[in-house]
Structures are given as C-alpha cells and as structure tokens.
Length: 196
Ligand SMILES: CC(C)(COP(=O)(O)OP(=O)(O)OC[C@H]1O[C@@H](n2cnc3c(N)ncnc32)[C@H](O)[C@@H]1O)[C@@H](O)C(=O)NCCC(=O)NCCS
Ligand SMILES: Nc1ncnc2c1ncn2[C@@H]1O[C@H](COP(=O)(O)OP(=O)(O)OP(=O)(O)O)[C@@H](O)[C@H]1O
Image (cartoon, rainbow, N blue to C red; front, side):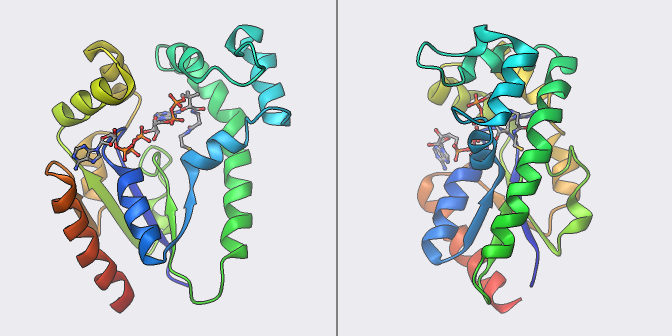
C-alpha cells in the first residue's frame, strides 16, 4: 500500500481538500477528527484532560470546551505538550486501527496537521501539502472562528513554518484561490495518485 499524508497549516484548507478527495473515493484517516473522538464525553482521554486542566475546561453539558482549552494551550507551550501527551498516543492508536480496516486497494490518506512538527514525513511515500500565505490563514481564522490577529498568530506560532512544510512536499496544493481553483487542483492530484 502507498502511504499518503495530507498536511497544511491551520486553516490552510486541509478539510476542504480532504472532503474533495473523499468524494472521489479516498479513505481518510483524519487526525483532527480522531483528536475529537479521543476526548469525547465518557472517554478515558477526556478524564485525563480534566485531571490535568480542571473542570473549568468542560461545558455545562460535560463536553470539552474546545475554545477554552485552546486559549490555554496555544498561550502556553508546556500546557500544549501536556495535552499532546494525552491525545497523541490515543490518536496514533486509533489511526493504526482505521488504516488496518481500510478495504484492500483503497487509496488511504492520513490527514496529519502536525506532520512536520512530529517529524513524520519519512514514514510516508507521498506527502501532499496544502499551502496558503500566512495572511490568508489569519483572514480565514478571523472569518471562520472570529479570532483576532493575535489569537491567530499564537496558533501559527505553535506550528512549523510554511517553508518547512513545503520542504517535505511531493505535491503542493495552492489554496490561495477560490474553491473552483482548489477543486481543479484536487482533480489533477487525484489522477496523479491513481496513476502513481
Ligand atoms: C486545543 C484544542 C482543544 C482546540 O480545539 P479546536 O476545536 O479549536 O481546534 P481543532 O482541534 O479543530 O484543530 C484545528 C487546528 O489547530 C491546529 N492544532 C491543533 N492542535 C495543535 C497543537 N497541539 N499544536 C499545533 N497546532 C495545533 C491544527 O492546525 C488543527 O488542524 C484541540 O486542537 C486539541 O485538542 N489539540 C490537541 C490535539 C492535537 O494535537 N491535534 C492536532 C492534530 S493531531
Ligand atoms: N479556497 C477557499 N476560498 C475561500 N475560503 C476557503 C477556501 N478553502 C477553505 N476556505 C475556508 O477557510 C476555512 C479553513 O478551511 P478548512 O477548515 O478546510 O481548513 P483546515 O486546514 O482544515 O483548518 P484547521 O487547521 O482549523 O483544521 C474554512 O472556513 C473554509 O470554509
């Protein structure tokens, strides 16, 4: 099986690309989705997060208050490392299970936001990077999540640089244009993946 990774900085458009690839038939193993599963209500992951960060990061309904936890961990690298120590092993384990369950012959794509940060690119035969300028990330975070420029920049500061991501790319998807331009690039990429 060819091991394919899809990565990109925050709000670069990873989910948009992943959705387009899934519509073509790719099987996705998405770490952002698994990061939610492993701290869902009732999980040992959520219990560990509450033990470290306190009940203040829970919503009244008992679910994780993601904006509250994000405000803590993106302002404090030690807190972020503690959260990652809880979530990352659980995400990796679940990703392994999902990969093993994929039908034979499927094009399986691992969506891994922190591929470069985790120095994981060597584990993949093909690395796809969704690329946008920092200003586009800031603007899309403002529009989607209502983040101020400072809030957006803290999150960017927790990640690898655009240059470091591009350095490991086999395929670059430029998502600075409109959704049609994105879909055209994904069409070409899909053909390349099927032929490769
Ligand atoms: C801090 C949390 C609760 C904030 O939740 P929120 O719903 O606002 O963001 P979401 O999970 O959708 O992530 C959005 C993006 O933030 C960035 N991001 C998330 N976690 C991290 C991190 N630890 N370091 C750097 N960037 C990160 C990624 O680009 C990701 O695609 C959440 O991101 C989290 O639990 N992070 C730790 C798990 C993790 O590392 N996830 C990244 C993929 S493995
Ligand atoms: N080509 C585009 N033109 C305009 N808006 C876009 C485009 N691509 C994505 N967006 C918007 O930008 C935001 C970020 O896109 P998306 O959620 O796909 O990125 P992401 O990399 O998965 O984000 P995150 O890192 O937070 O998980 C969303 O609101 C999305 O609708």
